[in-house]
Image 1 (cartoon, one colour):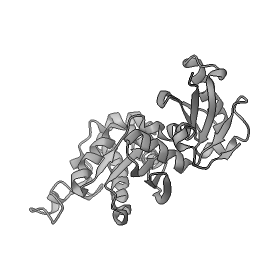
Image 2 (cartoon, one colour):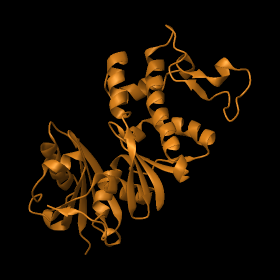
Image 3 (cartoon, helix red, strand yellow):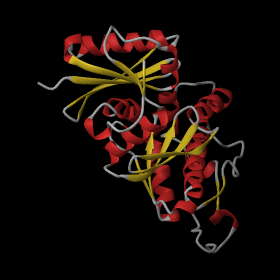
Length: 283
């Protein structure tokens, strides 16, 4: 009987956990706490309780994420391994997209770009732009850091009251730039802009910057398919931004199922036979 491999993406305050059994992802879950160790053990206990899993059902625990460095012993005596975050991102994105060669864009507090060619993983770099930017600017401009509230406000916003498009400054399209292409983010703001308009503008600014930077960073490698993972992918407006960029750049932005859990999924899948030749450091 197949046992379950537990994959845990340990953040500084939020931990994401999944089980993988016979190649299938089981019940992704997240939990918040004041510190990574509390978050990890809280997520682990809740996951086992909610899914009626006993310790004897578990084959192995695989850890990834910045908070994994705080864990220096086995989890409840179970075999425990640590997986590099970039590698976990790569494996999880490959699983979610079905692609072997891709660029993974991990949109967390900031953004990380990872080139993946089969089992070769290369960190391309990153941006100090991500969910942390959205939360910080929203706190300043909208007096809220609640991402769900920001998204609800944005659903009622009008982007024409925020961004300046090519059509606002030219009567004809420019070479390769349709009239609805953004010329300047927040370049058309007046005192008539509502909080809802600003919320939409902030999401658009963060996500469009990430998308455009991803395309530019991939020019030398000729990549046309990007797998987007991380919490920002779950904001409804994120898909709309990428939809606007795809025809402009001739690329495809893929948001896989369980996109915000891809790191945890990749960590768990690391323990499967097809990933057995990848290096990890055993705790």
